[in-house]
Amino acid sequence: MVNNFKLKRLSKCLSQKELANLSNVSINTISKLENGKVNTTQLGLIKRVSIVLDCTIDELF
Image (cartoon, rainbow, N blue to C red; front, top):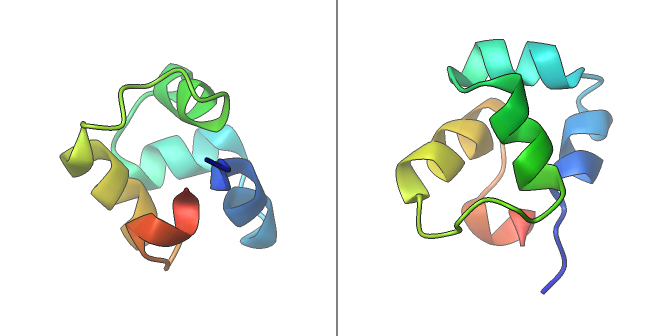
């Protein structure tokens, strides 16, 4: 499974801090998502990030 969180974030010219603020999650969580260390069953969290990144959840994985 490919993790595209960082690529999507960078394509929107967002820092981890900016994405965290916009999606209402911690910077630590954004870092963990980008490094594949967050449980992918946390769909609510992943959905919030996908909305900010203007993509589907499928595009993030």
